[in-house]
Length: 328
Image (cartoon, rainbow, N blue to C red; front, side, top):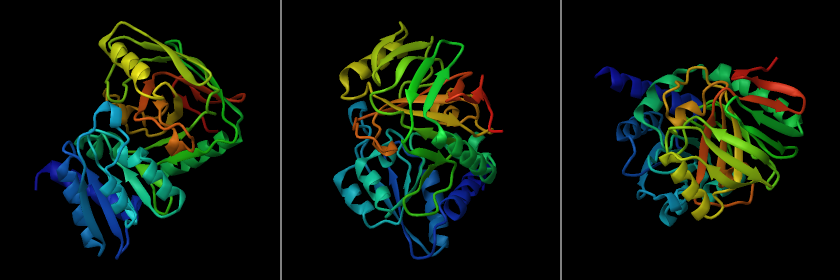
């Protein structure tokens, strides 16, 4: 067994035994596509089987940008018989953001680990090696502050200045553990996030970190936001052009869907949005679909955009100060 295989098995064991807490007799659905890291799929399957549970590997087609959140109807039906879902699609986030999956969460019929759009390095290095118990405790502390706040204000040296009311919206703690029906986490993981009140975010988002489906911009991209919608995308880089096209042509891609704060101190700063959005002290703002967060805006895309050196105020309390998390 080579060193990479050892890392894969170690992560699979952590995910199945502790983070998802799979039990004998349970049915676990592994949802993949042609871009999935199959060595990880098979490692997860092996651990599942060793516990006396059963796995089913479900393979869906590659999704284009216009259908990133769509599962196939047969997979949607199959998930109705599953206790656990592990999403490993490489081309899309459908196992995480599908409305059918959200329905099963709401009915407390399914729990899940999202491993979508991640490389093998995401599964074995960096944030995968964090202390998940310590991170869960941090997540609970940040979520308690967030739930008591009425407004959020995000700024950054690059020019981000975004405000939104947040009172009453669900706060999501994703710190690796999904041990009860209705819970969802990711791997690697480490964030707390929330949908700002729909139609109410105002200001400017300057994206200087990686963007889902697009990558690291050659230069910061400026998004102007009015009444919760992106009204313009400024920038001359290829990444700005691609983002502008998505916002202008894909239904509801202009919606401000999420604000998230990373808590994982082991995450690398490597230009990978899945790794960097979980990094401790970084913020990501997402556009598009907000159904997973309790909203009603259904879009073919949910795109995280990372912001460097952010400062975040919740009411008058600073919870992130120039990229440093403050929970005291």
